[in-house]
Structure formats: C-alpha cells, structure tokens
Amino acid sequence: MRVTVLGLTLLLAACGAPGARVRVAFDAAGVTEVRASGYADRSARRQVTADDPVRIASISKLVVAIGVMRLVEAGRLDLDADVSGMLGWPLRHPNFPDRPVTLRLLLSHRAGLTDAVDYAVPLGETLASRVRDPRAWDAAHGPGDFFRYANLNFPVVASVMERATGERFDRLMQRLVLAPLKLDACFNWPTCGDAAVARAVELDDRAGKPLRDDLHGRRPDCPVVPAADGSCDLATWRAGENGALFSPQGGLRISARDLATIGRLLLGGGAVDGVRLLTPASVEALLAERWAYDGGNGVTGESTPGTICGYGLAVQRLPSRRAGCRDDLFGDGVPRVGHSGDAYGLRSGLWINRARGRGVAYFVTAVPDGETGRRSAYSLSEERLAR
Image 1: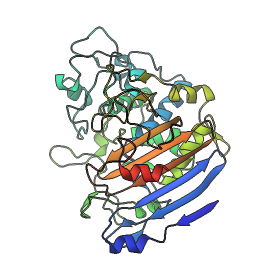
Image 2: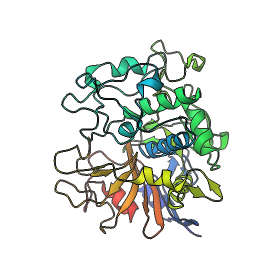
Image 3: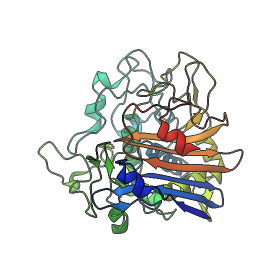
C-alpha cells in the first residue's frame, strides 16, 4: 500500500483554507492509496487522517440498504410487500390511496414522498404524524410513477427495520453491518468507541464556524433531536415509532478507510476480508438500475439538478448521456456505481468501477455553497477528489 500525506497541510491552513480532504483508493484486495490534508479539528490544530470518522451524509443510505438486504436474506423483510403491515399503521399517498408503498420504492426514491416537511423528527414525536401531512407527498405523482430524491424515505425504512426486529436502528445497524466488518462507525455516535469519538472530524462552514460534531473528544449530550421540552430520555424509544431519530438518511459517522471497506464489499459481491455479509444476488439487487431519467420521469437532483440520472436501491449510477444530465463526475465516461453526500459543508463520495475492480472513497469539508465544477454538475472539490 502506498500512503501519501499531502505536505500542503500547513500551507493550506496558513492561507485560510479550512477544509479537511481525505481520499482513499482501493481494489477488492485492499487499500491502494491514501491522501489526507487539512484539519479534523481546526481549533486544536489536529490534522485529519484517513481513520478519522466524519458525518458522511447521504452515503449513509447505501449502508442502510445493505442492512435492509441482510434482513431480506433472513426472511424478516420483503422488498415488495406493503410496508403498512410492518409499520402497524397505514402509509398511503393521500392522492393515490390504493397503491401500496414498498421498501423497493422507498429505497429507490419512487414512493411519492418529498422533503417538503422536516424529516428530522424529534424525540417524543412520531413518524406517522409527519407523513400524514399532505405536504410530505408529491401531489402529482403516485408510488412508482416518478423519481424524486427525498431524505424522508429513510426514516420510513428505519422504522420498518425496527418493527421487523424490535431493535433500535443504530444498534441494529451495528449488528447487521458495522460490527461484522469490524468498523468503528456508528449512526449519531452512541455505538462508536471512545477512540472514534476522540477522532471525530468537525464540520465547519467556510469561515470556520462549527456546524456539526464539534466534540473535542466528548460525546454529544443528546445523540438525537431532543424532545420539544429539551429532554433526551432514550428510554422512551419504541420500535418503529420514529425511525428518524438516528438519522438513517445521513447520520453515519465513518472514516474514509472504513468507507472503502464498504466499497470493497460491493466489489467482492458481498464478501470482504473473509467476511460474507450478502449473497452476490443481493448485491446485484442493490446495484441494478431501477430508474433512468428519460426527460420527464423524475427530478435529476433536488438541490443540484443534473447529478442523479440513474438509480438503484440507494445506489447512484453514472454517467448518463441523456439531455439534462451532467453527472460525469470523473470526466471519463466510464460507468460507476455508488453514492454521493452533501450536507453541512461536506461533500463525499463512494464510487466503484466494477469493470476494472477498483474504487474511491473521499470527503472534503468546508465546501462553499454554490461551488461549481468544470466538467459536471458536481462541485469542483468533488471532481478533484474523484480523479
């Protein structure tokens, strides 16, 4: 393995560039290259490494989908069953009440849900009350009709997982995915070890103001959105009542090196480092294209149009040559699958080239809003790290 720590760290800091940048290249056998620069914690002047966990944003969805497929393989979940039966309450589009909502539709963002309501549901509130709001639904399109990327899909998925197992989502994901792969990663910190908490990457804005995980070695006082009265008693948790609590849509804390292990799992057809987590058939079910943009059957990115033109089960597929798509992140026209992330100034990516058996995991922090790329609709920071 060739390891390169960029010697520009101090120069970048002196010039006022606040972001941390980490890139890990890999193949099925292991990590092939590491690059890291900048600070994980600017105030402490702690330099970032490839082993420092960061809130990886929407790549979390792909890891959740791996957990779902483990439960499908165990016979606990069915991708095509009406999730209402598992939730214990009816999940129905108000304008298309006769159409069932399934895990396959939720994972592929074709269930009809939107992010017009807040998907961060506080402790003490229920997900059922949130999705009863008509604004939670795309009024013009029913389940199965249209692709609209919506974070709200994943609190529903997490609630289904909890009801199927009786386990709290963060602990369930630890059992199903993270612990078997020996990853010191977690959703919203409770199941991470103290060493991971001590290495947390702080997410700052461009001016250096902390936005998330300003921990300095301390666990957060409340790992979920507190109740309306400010309390944080997790003993009130009930399975399936509020799958949003541990941020399944974006709350995974994981290092770039451990994220590369997830990529290697996919390259290995569900097995990595002697551990088989999924069958090859389950991996194919995740990666297979479930939606492709045809000019009118979906939205190519709610916040950044042109970035999503092909999708599987919590898996992006790129690039597309269709009009309206600018998703050739790598600029080489080579097919890749994976997922991107974008939240709190962070941009992240996990992408694999299945034909060549290699991939890349990366993140960069403190990316300014509106940063544009040169060859795609992704940011310039992402384009540079991708290549």
